[in-house]
Length: 470
Ligand code: NAD
Image (cartoon, rainbow, N blue to C red; front, top):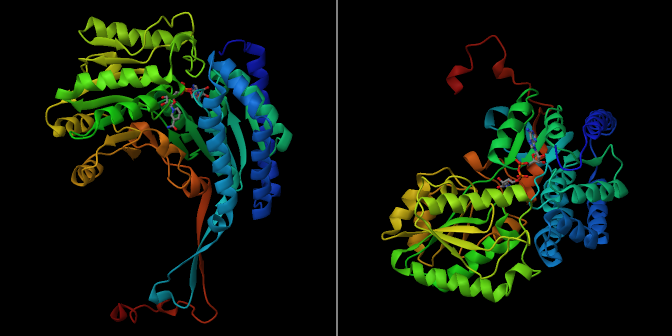
């Protein structure tokens, strides 16, 4: 149970979400196909409400984290939310348009059409690390597709969850969009409702529970999960540039990002140069890091202990721990960006998704060793390659499998409105953002329409006359 959430509150929340589910279903049955203007209006009021309450969201998220700069929340959460909604508003007409499909000559002059229909009542389960963006991103896709939506916020971000519930209630009736807070017991009841689709963002282990619960109703799921995103620095790429871009992606939200670079491969001879460049970059961005307001805290004590445990375990097994800044962070709720070298697969830090500001850096003599390592491990959510060599880029793209790729940059591929975002295997299934988000929350219904003139006489008995024509 999340801090401050009492058993009677959980029971009340469960009862309420079941009642709201029934009401959304009934409302859906009464009005199953919102038109384009209605959907656009829903998106506009969502966008305006987010802008109206932007400062409150920055404050709530910072309070939930212990500290996160308002600038980081604006750039990493509000900006992509607003841009994603604008993109949906502009694209609605194109996305909703029915699509003609060819008819085989045997059935002419009939016609085939693909129409996109809303699924109905959908559920969205939200993690704590980007509580606004990971609620609003899927909500945008679901509303564009014309659905009714219930969201379940994370127990680790209760202030943000409360605020979002209130803001949504300003623009939507609860039979259209509603957000719930609550811990695991609320989440379990939530994921066992007979939704028409569930989009879950969170850990791979909880994703399995959600999929199991959804399977009871054969509810389709989109799972946006995590994993260890590898980062490869090519043999000739500038180590300084790579270190800056990798550390930037790692330090955003103190590494608590599903697509943060999880570990890095650099050429063996350039390890020391990489570490030095990383130190220079991080100290340049965050002078006096423990007191620096631009650097986020780790969400809670439990996660700080988990991360410290990785360092203790790695050190005990012979790894070298290299904090990139000086000064004690322990009293601030923050954790210093730290490189770990000399790691092995026996260490916890190389088994779990790190989800914090720790960065194992490994080395290769031959670039193929790095590719072989990536391919010997579970398929990741993101893969980063720093290289300008066309042949090597093409080789890496065709010989590795990951949810997405960014070349010569980290993290920002997520913010591309027109690129689908989603994992593969243990890092997820399905995708959303842009058109793929609309499709995820739509039923693409194939419609065959017979013409006035053709009665498919060739398919009717008496048989025998058709076979020679094939
Ligand atoms: P989590 O899996 O612990 O929790 C996510 C949500 O699931 C929360 O709302 C929680 O209340 C709910 N939940 C918990 N137990 C449940 C159950 N038994 N049934 C149904 N729901 C349940 O994840 P987290 O710690 O909040 O987030 C961190 C994880 O999320 C990391 O693994 C990270 O990589 C991943 N993540 C993925 C993406 C992505 O887009 N792929 C984005 C952000 C985070």
